[in-house]
Length: 432
Image 1 (cartoon, rainbow, N blue to C red):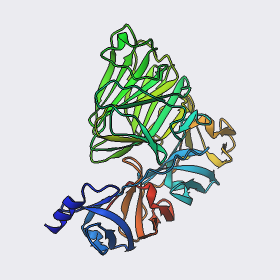
Image 2 (cartoon, rainbow, N blue to C red):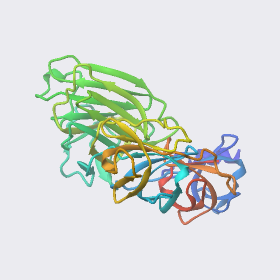
Image 3 (spheres, rainbow, N blue to C red):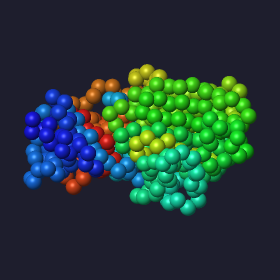
Image 4 (cartoon, rainbow, N blue to C red):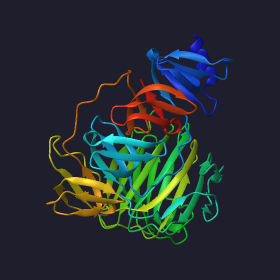
C-alpha cells in the first residue's frame, strides 16, 4: 500500500525515472546509482532520504532522459553483435583482429572480430542537408485556423507545442532523402509531417481546393495507434496510400522517427527506433513537388521535436544477416545494388581494404551499404555477474554485467565489448 501511495503522489511530477518491480508495482523518482550490483539507490521527492532496493525484485528501470545531442559522424554505422546486441557507433578502424568504436555514450569501445556479425553503414551520402533546429529563425509559423490554436515554441534545442500548431521550412529535400528526428510526448500525440511541400502554411484537407495554390506533397500522419500516408494535391481527390496499425509507441513517451523517400522508386518508408514499420509505394509515380517540410501538431497532448536531420539517402534498404556463421569469406553489399564475397583485411580512414584475390582491392565506406562477417562466434561468453540489458531504444541494446553506477556513468562488462564505462544519459531503460 505504501508503494502504491507513492506511485499516486509521484506519477504527475515531471522529469522522473520509474522503477517497475516483479509484481508490476511502479515507483517514481530518480536513479541515484548502484554502489553494489545487488542494490540500487533511489530518490523519491516524497521521501527525505534515499531508498535502497534489492535488484532481485526489480524487472525494469525507465530512465527519463533528455535525448543526447545530435551526433552524426563520418563513419557512423549500426553494429550487430553475434549475441543479438546492437548499437550505433562510429567505426574508427578495424585492424584485422579488433573493431575500434567511438560513440557519445562511450569511447575506446573494442570488439573482437568474431563477435561482430554485421555492420550497416550510414545510408546517408555525404554531409547533412539540414541539421537543427537552432531556433525559430528561418522557420515559418503556420496560421492554424482552429479554435484554441497556438504556435511551436523553441527551447533546449528543440520545438515543443501543447496546442494545434504548424511550422515549416524549405530544407532542399533531395530526390532521395532521409528525414529523422527525436520525438517526445505527454499523454498522447497527433503529428502530421508534410514532405516535399512547396507551401509553408498548413493545408486544410477538407477545404484544400479553395486554399491558395500549392504543389503536391505527401502527408505522413502519426498517432500512438496508427501511421497513415496520403498524397495531397489541389483539384484532385486525396489519395490514401494506406494506413498501418502501430504498437511501437506503447508504454513509452519518446521515440526516434525516420522517414525515407525515393523519387526514383516511388516509395516512402517509416522507421521507429531503427525498425522498419511500413513501406508505401505511390502507384502513380512520386508526386511531391517541393523541397520543404512542415510539422503540424494537431493539438492532442504535448509534443517535443529535437535533433532534426535531413540527409541524402542512397535508396538501399537494410538486409538481415544471410551469411553462414562458419563462412570463411565476408559478404559486401554495395550501393545501390549488388554484392560480392571477399575477406576484409582492414578498415582505416574510411577505406575498406580486402585480402588479395578479392574482386576489389579496396572501397570507400561510402560505397558500401552493409558488411557481413564470417566466421563468427555465436556462443555467448559467460558473464561474471548476472547480466542486464541496457536499451538505447526499442531495437538497440547492450547486454552488461553492472559493477556499479555512479556520477551518471555505468561501469560494467559486456560479453562483446569487454570492460566498459558508459554515459547513462544515452540509455532509455534497463531490464533485469
